[in-house]
Picture 1: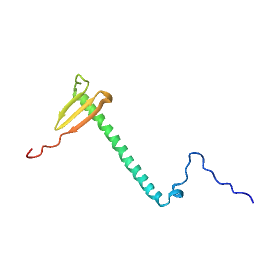
Picture 2: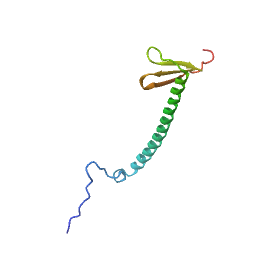
Picture 3: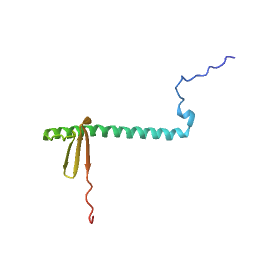
Picture 4: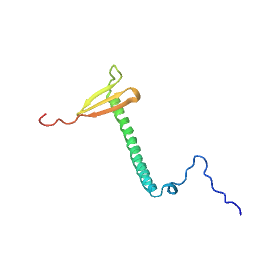
Length: 103
């Protein structure tokens, strides 16, 4: 009788997860899909953050704010402190927490 040739996986290729793990694969698949969902949300938020950074930089330039000796631009507006560092025009925005009564 002729011997059946077994299919060998190419080096570095893994078997289907269901062949190896069964029920555990369902949990891993669910976790993987959730990961991709959160990744998509994060990337969209990053795109929006970058756009908003550009708007801040344009408005600061339009206002004619000058850099300090260390190259930074720092100012406060309505309880926010905005700092722009010369390194890639890094923008930092801090909001001060409202004061608690009785403090």
